[in-house]
Length: 66
Image (tube, rainbow, N blue to C red; front, side):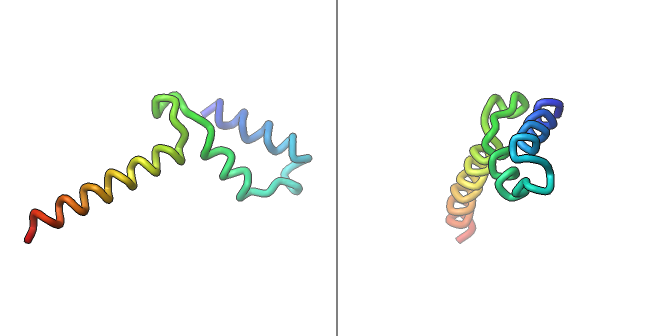
């Protein structure tokens, strides 16, 4: 969490303060930062992998119920 805090603080300062920071752009950029807890993958990559796996499971599981 300290790394994420550092990222947030740095980006807000770089933008000129909280009032000048676009929160949506900040969120987008933070979702691209790799994290140790998820084996140095970014949260957006993890989300895409999870959604892909879910879609594959849904198509496989729906065929078994017929």
